[in-house]
Image (cartoon, rainbow, N blue to C red; front, side, top):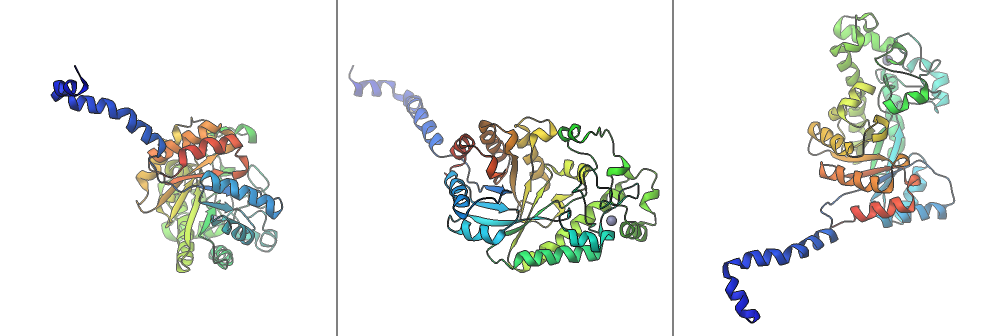
Length: 362
Ligand SMILES: [Zn+2]
Protein backbone atom coordinates (compact mmCIF):
# COMPACT_ATOMS: atom_id res chain seq x y z
CA UNK A 1 0.00 0.00 0.00
CA UNK A 2 1.43 3.37 -0.96
CA UNK A 3 1.15 6.38 1.34
CA UNK A 4 -1.71 7.97 -0.57
CA UNK A 5 -3.96 4.94 -0.37
CA UNK A 6 -3.12 4.47 3.29
CA UNK A 7 -4.44 7.95 4.06
CA UNK A 8 -7.51 7.27 1.99
CA UNK A 9 -8.06 4.03 3.80
CA UNK A 10 -7.94 5.49 7.31
CA UNK A 11 -10.56 8.00 6.16
CA UNK A 12 -12.57 9.00 9.21
CA UNK A 13 -9.54 8.28 11.32
CA UNK A 14 -7.79 11.25 9.81
CA UNK A 15 -8.77 13.59 12.65
CA UNK A 16 -7.16 11.22 15.08
CA UNK A 17 -4.09 11.10 12.92
CA UNK A 18 -3.89 14.89 12.64
CA UNK A 19 -4.28 15.34 16.40
CA UNK A 20 -1.68 12.74 17.05
CA UNK A 21 0.80 14.49 14.82
CA UNK A 22 0.11 18.03 15.98
CA UNK A 23 0.32 17.56 19.77
CA UNK A 24 4.09 17.52 19.97
CA UNK A 25 4.23 20.58 17.71
CA UNK A 26 1.76 22.56 19.89
CA UNK A 27 3.55 21.61 23.07
CA UNK A 28 6.85 22.80 21.69
CA UNK A 29 5.25 26.08 20.69
CA UNK A 30 3.73 26.59 24.15
CA UNK A 31 7.13 26.17 25.72
CA UNK A 32 8.61 28.80 23.43
CA UNK A 33 6.05 31.47 24.24
CA UNK A 34 5.07 31.75 27.90
CA UNK A 35 1.35 32.21 28.50
CA UNK A 36 1.57 35.33 30.66
CA UNK A 37 2.17 38.95 29.97
CA UNK A 38 3.60 40.39 33.17
CA UNK A 39 5.38 43.39 34.62
CA UNK A 40 8.08 42.70 37.14
CA UNK A 41 10.04 44.74 39.62
CA UNK A 42 12.69 44.70 42.32
CA UNK A 43 12.94 46.60 45.58
CA UNK A 44 16.38 48.21 45.76
CA UNK A 45 17.67 48.64 49.30
CA UNK A 46 21.41 48.60 48.61
CA UNK A 47 22.67 51.88 47.22
CA UNK A 48 26.39 51.27 47.55
CA UNK A 49 28.78 51.45 44.64
CA UNK A 50 29.92 53.72 41.84
CA UNK A 51 27.51 54.73 39.12
CA UNK A 52 29.06 52.11 36.87
CA UNK A 53 28.55 49.42 39.49
CA UNK A 54 24.92 50.43 39.80
CA UNK A 55 24.63 50.33 35.99
CA UNK A 56 25.82 46.72 36.05
CA UNK A 57 22.95 45.86 38.40
CA UNK A 58 20.42 47.74 36.31
CA UNK A 59 21.60 46.04 33.14
CA UNK A 60 21.26 42.65 34.80
CA UNK A 61 17.68 43.47 35.82
CA UNK A 62 16.78 44.79 32.38
CA UNK A 63 18.25 41.76 30.62
CA UNK A 64 16.41 39.39 32.94
CA UNK A 65 13.12 41.01 31.93
CA UNK A 66 12.32 43.43 34.76
CA UNK A 67 10.33 46.58 34.02
CA UNK A 68 11.26 48.78 36.94
CA UNK A 69 12.87 49.31 40.31
CA UNK A 70 11.71 50.58 43.70
CA UNK A 71 14.67 52.26 45.42
CA UNK A 72 14.37 53.15 49.13
CA UNK A 73 16.43 56.35 48.79
CA UNK A 74 18.52 58.42 46.36
CA UNK A 75 15.56 58.57 44.00
CA UNK A 76 17.08 61.19 41.69
CA UNK A 77 20.23 59.23 41.11
CA UNK A 78 18.30 56.03 40.40
CA UNK A 79 15.95 57.88 38.02
CA UNK A 80 18.93 59.17 36.08
CA UNK A 81 20.64 55.78 35.82
CA UNK A 82 17.47 53.72 35.27
CA UNK A 83 16.52 55.92 32.33
CA UNK A 84 19.55 54.61 30.43
CA UNK A 85 18.04 51.12 30.66
CA UNK A 86 14.41 52.16 30.15
CA UNK A 87 13.47 50.97 33.62
CA UNK A 88 10.67 52.70 35.57
CA UNK A 89 11.40 54.08 39.03
CA UNK A 90 8.94 53.96 41.93
CA UNK A 91 9.83 55.85 45.10
CA UNK A 92 9.82 53.42 48.03
CA UNK A 93 8.78 55.56 51.00
CA UNK A 94 8.94 54.32 54.62
CA UNK A 95 5.80 56.03 55.87
CA UNK A 96 4.79 55.65 59.55
CA UNK A 97 7.87 53.94 61.02
CA UNK A 98 10.05 57.03 61.41
CA UNK A 99 12.97 56.01 63.61
CA UNK A 100 15.50 57.66 61.31
CA UNK A 101 13.64 60.96 61.48
CA UNK A 102 15.50 62.29 64.52
CA UNK A 103 14.44 65.96 64.32
CA UNK A 104 10.78 64.85 64.24
CA UNK A 105 11.24 62.51 67.22
CA UNK A 106 12.96 65.26 69.22
CA UNK A 107 10.39 67.91 68.36
CA UNK A 108 7.14 65.94 68.43
CA UNK A 109 7.45 62.74 70.46
CA UNK A 110 3.75 63.18 71.31
CA UNK A 111 2.83 62.45 67.66
CA UNK A 112 4.06 58.86 68.03
CA UNK A 113 2.05 55.74 68.83
CA UNK A 114 1.43 54.54 72.38
CA UNK A 115 0.73 50.92 73.39
CA UNK A 116 -2.02 49.54 75.64
CA UNK A 117 0.31 49.83 78.66
CA UNK A 118 0.55 53.58 77.99
CA UNK A 119 4.17 53.37 76.77
CA UNK A 120 5.30 55.51 73.84
CA UNK A 121 6.91 53.77 70.86
CA UNK A 122 9.63 56.43 71.10
CA UNK A 123 10.77 55.49 74.59
CA UNK A 124 9.66 51.82 74.67
CA UNK A 125 9.82 50.60 71.06
CA UNK A 126 8.54 47.03 70.58
CA UNK A 127 10.97 44.30 69.42
CA UNK A 128 13.69 46.55 67.98
CA UNK A 129 15.01 50.03 68.59
CA UNK A 130 13.70 51.30 65.26
CA UNK A 131 10.02 50.53 65.98
CA UNK A 132 9.10 54.19 66.48
CA UNK A 133 5.79 54.87 64.79
CA UNK A 134 3.97 58.07 63.91
CA UNK A 135 0.25 57.90 64.76
CA UNK A 136 -1.95 58.28 61.64
CA UNK A 137 -4.85 59.67 63.70
CA UNK A 138 -3.16 63.01 64.42
CA UNK A 139 -3.92 65.67 61.79
CA UNK A 140 -0.41 67.13 62.33
CA UNK A 141 1.11 63.74 61.57
CA UNK A 142 -1.03 63.37 58.45
CA UNK A 143 0.14 66.78 57.27
CA UNK A 144 3.73 65.81 57.98
CA UNK A 145 3.43 62.69 55.80
CA UNK A 146 1.69 64.65 53.03
CA UNK A 147 4.59 67.13 53.03
CA UNK A 148 7.06 64.26 52.68
CA UNK A 149 5.03 62.97 49.74
CA UNK A 150 5.15 66.45 48.14
CA UNK A 151 8.94 66.32 48.35
CA UNK A 152 8.97 63.03 46.43
CA UNK A 153 6.53 64.42 43.84
CA UNK A 154 9.07 67.10 42.90
CA UNK A 155 10.90 64.38 41.01
CA UNK A 156 8.68 64.32 37.96
CA UNK A 157 9.99 61.05 36.49
CA UNK A 158 8.75 58.99 39.45
CA UNK A 159 6.05 56.54 38.28
CA UNK A 160 4.58 55.93 41.72
CA UNK A 161 4.91 56.81 45.36
CA UNK A 162 5.32 53.42 46.99
CA UNK A 163 4.17 53.35 50.63
CA UNK A 164 5.81 50.93 53.04
CA UNK A 165 5.42 50.53 56.83
CA UNK A 166 1.96 51.97 56.32
CA UNK A 167 0.36 50.14 59.23
CA UNK A 168 0.49 49.62 63.00
CA UNK A 169 3.41 47.76 64.63
CA UNK A 170 2.93 43.98 64.54
CA UNK A 171 0.62 43.05 67.40
CA UNK A 172 1.66 39.51 66.48
CA UNK A 173 4.86 38.85 64.54
CA UNK A 174 4.92 36.33 61.66
CA UNK A 175 5.52 32.92 63.27
CA UNK A 176 9.03 32.43 61.84
CA UNK A 177 10.26 35.73 63.32
CA UNK A 178 9.02 35.20 66.90
CA UNK A 179 11.94 33.08 68.21
CA UNK A 180 14.44 35.64 66.88
CA UNK A 181 12.87 38.29 69.09
CA UNK A 182 12.46 35.90 72.03
CA UNK A 183 8.66 36.12 72.04
CA UNK A 184 5.81 33.61 71.99
CA UNK A 185 2.69 35.41 70.78
CA UNK A 186 -0.23 33.04 71.29
CA UNK A 187 -2.55 36.04 71.66
CA UNK A 188 -2.44 39.85 71.54
CA UNK A 189 -0.37 41.27 74.41
CA UNK A 190 -0.75 44.91 75.57
CA UNK A 191 2.88 45.91 75.02
CA UNK A 192 2.57 45.20 71.27
CA UNK A 193 -0.97 46.58 70.90
CA UNK A 194 -1.21 50.14 69.46
CA UNK A 195 -2.46 52.89 69.40
CA UNK A 196 -3.75 54.29 72.67
CA UNK A 197 -2.34 57.80 72.35
CA UNK A 198 -4.43 60.76 73.55
CA UNK A 199 -5.53 61.61 70.02
CA UNK A 200 -6.78 58.06 69.32
CA UNK A 201 -8.55 57.76 72.67
CA UNK A 202 -10.24 61.14 72.24
CA UNK A 203 -11.33 60.46 68.67
CA UNK A 204 -12.72 57.02 69.52
CA UNK A 205 -14.56 58.42 72.54
CA UNK A 206 -16.09 61.18 70.42
CA UNK A 207 -17.25 58.67 67.79
CA UNK A 208 -18.34 55.75 69.99
CA UNK A 209 -18.60 57.06 73.57
CA UNK A 210 -15.96 54.74 75.06
CA UNK A 211 -12.34 55.15 76.00
CA UNK A 212 -10.71 52.25 74.09
CA UNK A 213 -8.25 51.57 76.90
CA UNK A 214 -11.23 50.69 79.13
CA UNK A 215 -12.87 48.26 76.66
CA UNK A 216 -13.50 44.84 78.23
CA UNK A 217 -11.75 43.03 75.43
CA UNK A 218 -10.07 45.49 73.05
CA UNK A 219 -8.47 42.67 71.05
CA UNK A 220 -11.87 41.21 70.12
CA UNK A 221 -13.77 44.47 69.66
CA UNK A 222 -14.91 44.78 66.04
CA UNK A 223 -15.68 48.49 66.31
CA UNK A 224 -12.22 49.23 67.66
CA UNK A 225 -10.58 47.04 64.99
CA UNK A 226 -12.50 48.85 62.27
CA UNK A 227 -11.58 52.21 63.84
CA UNK A 228 -7.89 51.33 63.59
CA UNK A 229 -8.16 50.08 59.99
CA UNK A 230 -9.86 53.37 59.15
CA UNK A 231 -7.07 55.53 60.60
CA UNK A 232 -4.54 54.08 58.16
CA UNK A 233 -7.01 53.89 55.28
CA UNK A 234 -7.90 57.57 55.73
CA UNK A 235 -4.23 58.58 55.55
CA UNK A 236 -3.60 56.42 52.47
CA UNK A 237 -6.60 57.88 50.69
CA UNK A 238 -5.45 61.42 51.46
CA UNK A 239 -2.04 60.59 50.01
CA UNK A 240 -3.79 59.05 46.99
CA UNK A 241 -5.58 62.32 46.23
CA UNK A 242 -2.34 64.28 46.50
CA UNK A 243 -0.42 61.86 44.29
CA UNK A 244 -3.14 61.38 41.68
CA UNK A 245 -3.55 65.15 41.31
CA UNK A 246 0.02 65.17 40.02
CA UNK A 247 -0.65 62.34 37.57
CA UNK A 248 1.50 59.95 39.59
CA UNK A 249 0.39 56.52 40.79
CA UNK A 250 0.09 55.26 44.33
CA UNK A 251 1.36 51.80 45.24
CA UNK A 252 2.11 50.08 48.54
CA UNK A 253 4.02 47.19 50.10
CA UNK A 254 1.59 45.38 52.36
CA UNK A 255 1.23 42.18 54.41
CA UNK A 256 0.69 39.02 52.33
CA UNK A 257 -3.09 38.54 52.42
CA UNK A 258 -5.92 40.84 53.50
CA UNK A 259 -6.71 38.54 56.45
CA UNK A 260 -3.11 38.37 57.73
CA UNK A 261 -2.69 42.12 57.18
CA UNK A 262 -5.76 42.96 59.24
CA UNK A 263 -5.00 40.57 62.09
CA UNK A 264 -1.24 41.15 62.48
CA UNK A 265 -0.87 44.86 61.66
CA UNK A 266 -4.41 46.38 61.34
CA UNK A 267 -3.87 46.97 57.65
CA UNK A 268 -7.08 46.70 55.60
CA UNK A 269 -5.45 47.24 52.24
CA UNK A 270 -8.30 46.15 49.93
CA UNK A 271 -10.03 49.39 51.03
CA UNK A 272 -7.18 51.64 49.95
CA UNK A 273 -7.27 53.81 46.87
CA UNK A 274 -4.18 52.25 45.27
CA UNK A 275 -3.21 51.71 41.64
CA UNK A 276 -1.18 48.65 42.53
CA UNK A 277 -0.51 46.61 45.61
CA UNK A 278 2.69 44.68 46.38
CA UNK A 279 1.83 42.07 49.07
CA UNK A 280 4.97 40.74 50.73
CA UNK A 281 4.20 37.06 50.23
CA UNK A 282 7.24 35.89 52.16
CA UNK A 283 6.16 32.27 52.53
CA UNK A 284 8.93 31.23 54.93
CA UNK A 285 7.90 33.94 57.43
CA UNK A 286 4.60 32.08 57.83
CA UNK A 287 6.07 28.55 57.65
CA UNK A 288 4.39 28.03 54.28
CA UNK A 289 5.59 26.28 51.13
CA UNK A 290 6.15 28.24 47.94
CA UNK A 291 2.82 26.97 46.57
CA UNK A 292 1.06 29.10 49.24
CA UNK A 293 2.05 32.21 47.25
CA UNK A 294 -0.59 31.27 44.67
CA UNK A 295 -3.21 30.94 47.39
CA UNK A 296 -2.21 34.30 48.91
CA UNK A 297 -2.51 35.98 45.49
CA UNK A 298 -5.97 34.43 45.00
CA UNK A 299 -7.11 35.66 48.44
CA UNK A 300 -5.95 39.18 47.62
CA UNK A 301 -7.59 39.04 44.20
CA UNK A 302 -10.94 38.10 45.76
CA UNK A 303 -11.04 41.33 47.79
CA UNK A 304 -9.38 43.75 45.38
CA UNK A 305 -11.13 45.79 42.70
CA UNK A 306 -10.29 44.33 39.29
CA UNK A 307 -8.60 47.61 38.34
CA UNK A 308 -5.97 47.34 41.07
CA UNK A 309 -2.86 45.57 39.91
CA UNK A 310 -1.10 43.11 42.21
CA UNK A 311 2.58 42.24 42.23
CA UNK A 312 3.61 39.34 44.40
CA UNK A 313 6.50 40.29 46.70
CA UNK A 314 9.11 37.52 47.05
CA UNK A 315 11.70 37.22 49.82
CA UNK A 316 14.64 36.01 47.74
CA UNK A 317 17.21 35.42 50.57
CA UNK A 318 15.22 32.35 51.67
CA UNK A 319 14.30 31.03 48.22
CA UNK A 320 16.14 28.68 45.91
CA UNK A 321 16.39 29.68 42.24
CA UNK A 322 13.73 27.17 41.25
CA UNK A 323 11.40 28.41 44.01
CA UNK A 324 11.59 31.95 42.65
CA UNK A 325 10.52 30.75 39.21
CA UNK A 326 7.77 28.56 40.73
CA UNK A 327 6.54 31.50 42.82
CA UNK A 328 6.21 33.54 39.64
CA UNK A 329 4.11 30.81 38.04
CA UNK A 330 1.91 30.25 41.13
CA UNK A 331 1.33 34.00 41.33
CA UNK A 332 0.49 34.42 37.65
CA UNK A 333 -1.84 31.41 37.63
CA UNK A 334 -3.85 33.04 40.41
CA UNK A 335 -4.23 36.54 39.07
CA UNK A 336 -1.01 38.42 39.86
CA UNK A 337 0.22 40.99 37.34
CA UNK A 338 3.83 40.09 38.06
CA UNK A 339 6.33 39.86 40.89
CA UNK A 340 8.56 42.12 42.91
CA UNK A 341 11.86 40.80 44.22
CA UNK A 342 13.24 41.62 47.63
CA UNK A 343 15.76 42.46 46.59
CA UNK A 344 17.77 42.64 43.39
CA UNK A 345 20.89 42.29 45.52
CA UNK A 346 19.90 38.82 46.79
CA UNK A 347 19.51 37.38 43.30
CA UNK A 348 22.35 35.05 42.25
CA UNK A 349 23.19 34.36 38.63
CA UNK A 350 21.23 31.13 38.94
CA UNK A 351 18.17 32.91 40.38
CA UNK A 352 18.17 35.28 37.40
CA UNK A 353 18.59 32.40 34.95
CA UNK A 354 15.58 30.48 36.31
CA UNK A 355 13.41 33.54 36.66
CA UNK A 356 14.11 35.06 33.27
CA UNK A 357 13.20 31.74 31.63
CA UNK A 358 9.65 31.82 33.02
CA UNK A 359 8.96 35.52 32.78
CA UNK A 360 10.11 36.23 29.26
CA UNK A 361 7.40 38.08 27.43
CA UNK A 362 5.32 36.07 24.99
ZN1 LIG B 1 -2.72 57.27 68.24
